[in-house]
Length: 354
Ligand SMILES: Cc1ncc(COP(=O)(O)O)c(C=O)c1O
Image (tube, rainbow, N blue to C red; front, side, top):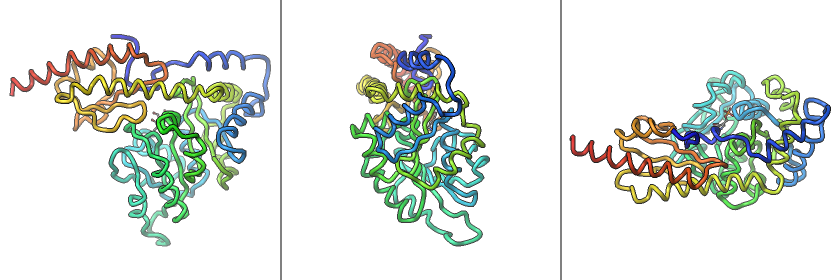
C-alpha cells in the first residue's frame, strides 16, 4: 500500500512552514495561556482578515471549539438546529449534549445544506415550557459532503437566524476550502452573512493541531467564552505554539493556497472518474476537497485492500475520498488508476454472475 491516502485530510502531515514556525516559537520563555507575542500576532492576522471587531480564541481541536463556543452562547434548555449528518451531531460523541446539556435537532437536508425553510419548520413550541427552545443554527462550511454554501445561501440563513433571535454558528473545520472555492474574501463570507461565531479550522489545512474560535463581530457570548473554554478543557497553557501556527498559516495567504490546492486535487480526482460514469457516480457536487462516489458494492473491499478510504454510507455504497494540502497530482493519478483497474472489473464480474 502506498503511504499516502484519500481517507482523510487529517491524515496529512504538518506543512513545512508551520513546522518552521513552531521551531521558531520554541525560543526562550513566553507567558502562558495566550499572553504572548505569537498569539497576539495570530489575533492581529485574524483582525486583518475580518475587521477590527473580530475576537479570536484558540482551542486544541474542532470538537472542543464547536462545543465551548456553543456552550458560551446557549442555555441547556435551548436547541441547535443543524443538518442531519453534521459533525456536531454524529461525530462528536454527544460532546455538546453532555457538555452544553442542550438538544441537537438534526433535520434531513439535501447536498448537506440547511435551508431557511428547514429552520422555519423548527420554529414551534416557542414559549411552551414543555418544549426545548430554538437557540441556534449550526452549519458546516464546507459541508460534510464536500459541498459549499454560497454567500447568498449563508446570508439567507443569517437573516432567518436574526429574525428568530437564533445564534448563527458555523463549523469551519474546512472553512479555508470553502473560501478558496467561493473565491470571496473571508469578511464577505463571515461578516456580511451574519455569522455570529465560527470554528476556523487549522488542523486539516496544514497545522499540527489547533482551531480558532472566531466571533467576526462583538457578541455577548465572548465574555462567557473565556470560562467555557477553560471549563471545557480547551485552554492550552503553551498557547504560543497555537498562535505561532495560525500566524504562519495566515501569513501570505498560505491558508488559501493550501486549501485551493486540496480543492484542485479533488476536482482532478473527480475528472479522472468522469469516463467511468457508467460504473461510478459522484453523488455530490465536488466544490471543496471531498469526492463522494457510489462504488459497485463488490469493488469496495478489493479497493480498500489496496488503498485506504472510508465508506461514508454503507447502505448506498458511497465512499468518501478526501484530498489535502499535500496531495500531489501523481497521488491522484495513482489512486485513480487503481479505481479504474478494480471497479469496472468487479462490476462486470457482478453483472455476468447475475
Ligand atoms: C465538519 C467537521 N467539524 C469538526 C471537526 C473537528 O474534529 P476534531 O475534534 O477531530 O478536531 C471535523 C473533523 O473531522 C469535521 O469534519
